[in-house]
Length: 161
Image (tube, rainbow, N blue to C red; front, side, top):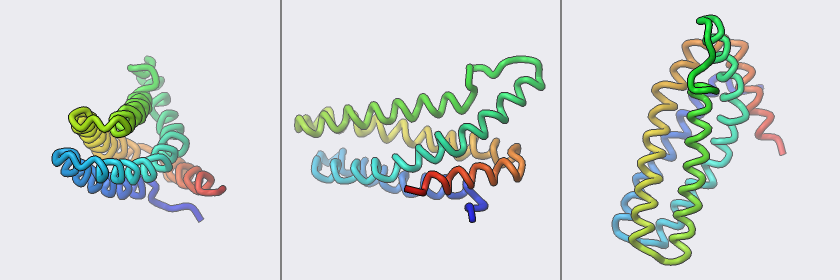
């Protein structure tokens, strides 16, 4: 049976990532590159399935809502794809920063690691805030119970090997 609260599930996952970001920030500030590498690996392992749930589970359903809402107001969603597209673009930016941070770690460039880590931390914190306080609230307020169940069912399908 699918989870009846997929938005709560995503928010719970955000809390874990925020906790790991605090650890990453401390490790980057002290230039403990081994710890930065370990924490980054944890964040990546956790974020990959999380992003997948959002991108393949929530965003398609929420995107339909935004399209319907814009059409009912007589115009296209601005920007194209609306808030969902903004979150997708941020996921892409987060992945890119992670890649750059890994390269800096592999080169042992401590100052660059600190800068890239802080960039990642700042982007993820603001991204999570927008999802939790804007996107998920819009979803919670506007998706029908059938749409929420569709998101939950999509989550379940993503868990299958």
